[in-house]
Image (cartoon, rainbow over all chains, first blue to last red):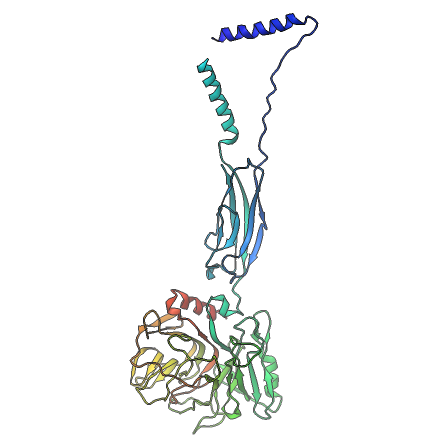
Length: 118
Length: 358
């Protein structure tokens, strides 16, 4: 079967050359890959300070993404997830509904926010 | 041909998968700092609702600017205490200058320096309205009945001493002798006749928190919250008390004092108490029960008083409600909460830790 296909291609090339003896043409393959822009996450702000008695639901930061392929993004967070929560669809980081646990006051936390795009 | 096309399709699929089939992820770090406890806003910090908040030495409610007023006994001049510094403690220096400016003197005591020419004529309800009437302030207009201003030696912060008009005793006496009868009128009085100033009871403000000490061997019985009315006619009712002296067997108790019955009180010490933080709540998870914590330890659990807590006529700061066995004590803070802390697991411990850090 492979031989048959090659024969057909050769035949077409030969016949094209025969139709115009002055012109010659050759063909090559150009492969172009269009990649999505780099997928990145931005936190605004990336640093925040909250009062010990901050109300539950107070917005601490908002995560947003750039790039990617346009598919829906899911947000998650690690670190102090007792006092702070993230909306998996919105990327909004807020104080937990019950507020900050008293024992957690006077401390600093490093949370990692991750965006995932399927 | 079909196989070739299928192979080509598979190859294309694999190449495409390399570019997008694996989920894309991106991460970033969020740094969050949580400030320490605001030591000047007790009522909002704990998420509790304060009906009353009195202090002679610190701010308990954010925005408050005047905790108390002193009256100079020698000439009737008055002086408003104020806060200073980031922790909003009362700075006694200006008060001391005022108290000594008209020939005032001091008396060195075990725990405090007492300013003999300064009575405390008002302790303001920091949880009350700021600029209108009915703040439920604790007042004593009669100079000789005013508790005495003093400064604690251990930390240099103001405290309040008992009323100096000791029937049968010296004036200013401050001599510890159990059995002396102090008049309940000799205190700072919050009249419940003022609209909105209601007593501690079921359905009303239900938790009493007092930070204090009894300096020698007398009691800090108190009609703080709800006392006996009439007093000592027992067993007509119960006194919602803090620390009170039980002459037999001679021990301090905390809890609810019922005449002829102390079933809802716990013995805490036979000796003077340098620091006492009592949290006592009335009517908790079951009707008409009482819980008390003393210095962070629960000493009374779901006890039903044998007599109901009486309807009192006033909240007193500075003397007890029983008009017996009253004596030396010092007062720093008193807060009455609208809710029963026994209904919130762990809250009494949080309150204890908080106030102990002040």
